[in-house]
Image (cartoon, rainbow, N blue to C red):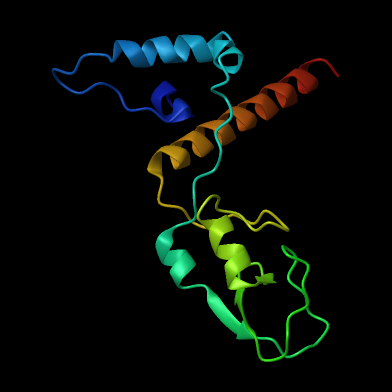
Length: 145
């Protein structure tokens, strides 16, 4: 059985450390649903990692029927396109501006790695909250069914 700090993903205060009062206030807002009221529960995903964007696979078009899903123009034979890890391909001039704004494929929403550590923490917290909701519902259903 895990202890409180492991369950919440927190670290106990070290020797001589004092609590961060703003952090406690933010948690109070979150716990009482005020975070949603303030519009702080949704964050737009950050841009994809520069290194990932620069190292995207390039492919030469070999089929005349291929078309870019963003601009809907047919790809000409021998044209070079960028291929995402999900195997969707796009014209470079269509996908590169997209990846400088967000980190996902425009078709399937497959997420590419990103450089923003704050967003990673936000995602983990949101995932953990969803898991806790599922665990509570499972517990509730097991008790009252």
